[in-house]
Length: 130
Image 1 (tube, rainbow, N blue to C red):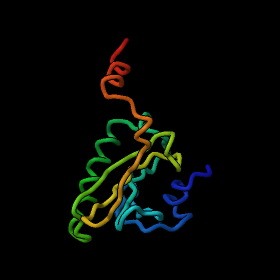
Image 2: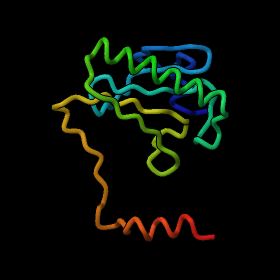
Image 3: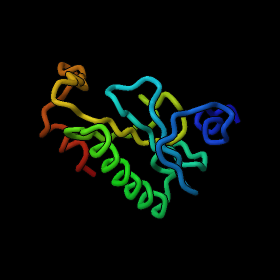
Image 4: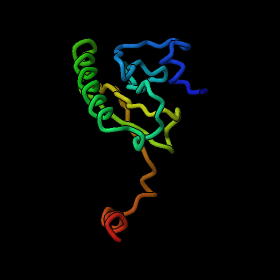
């Protein structure tokens, strides 16, 4: 398999690992949005959220809490954005969770094309119509 994250998990590519257990490896993103931007990566190769079983999902949330406390204690973060991409926007096709520390002066913003957005009522109807 030619997966970048699988190679990092196997130790074939070095990483700045800040946490590891039998199910996941957490390492710093090499293209961070802010200082301390980390990725939680399952050791088992899975691609999207549809491939994550309930046990692994619970474990990832547990690890999110561990990392959050570590970032608060060590980097004195003021907030945390947690996100996960599937398919479009997923650069590495191996499920992973971004933990992006927030700081008062980070100026990090997720910006989207506001002109392409529909009214919430229209989107609601699309989602709920049978």
